[in-house]
Length: 244
Image 1 (cartoon, helix red, strand yellow):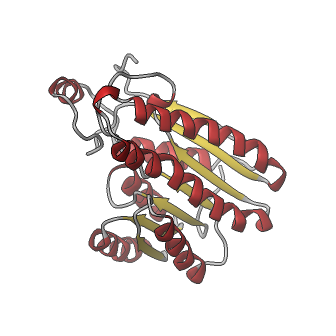
Image 2: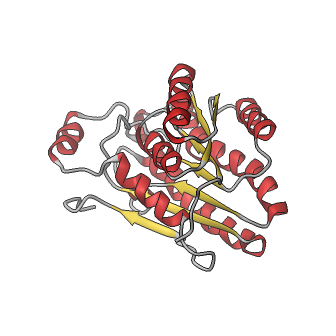
Image 3: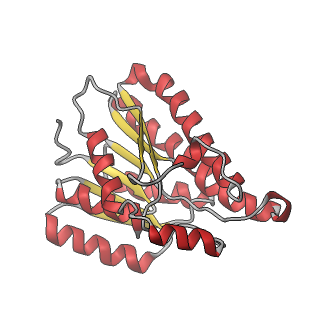
């Protein structure tokens, strides 16, 4: 396995859940970090804590990844602090439960712009640094919902299917630059994810021995530490008792 000590990574949705767990794991392994999320106070405290405990450099940017100007400003902050980018973890995401006949264009845009358009935009900026290096790794967090259609989550599923298709397409585009692309598809994870969920969903999730954010962080770490000749292109990870 390769070490990530001294490498530089961008992690989105880094203030909580999977993003936070990835940030903690990477810092413990010696990586320098750029953390992106909407909560500036949380990011500031987290950056100080990770730097103090792990002797790494950690910067942050408050950004709404549905806003292209925020994405570009965040990347500008990164470029002023680091000369290279080794790993991009596109983790930020949002799911709103709603049946299609009850939805609205505004609601659909919120989910699509964060889960897919923002991910594509940040990837676009990142590969412009990675291509001249002829090295890099992009990790996109998709979902089981990127493999199966789930009633009530149609727009969320559409974005996660999109992430899978986008990831496979750019993997083929970037092979010649020695840039690896991995998509990770978690099942049920114990996070604050999910809005407007019906009671039966909440009950079912609470009764399941779900994955922890740290489980997904270990999966991310696994794919980015493989030998240079190994590309883990897709990794599906579910709780043992999850059926779908």
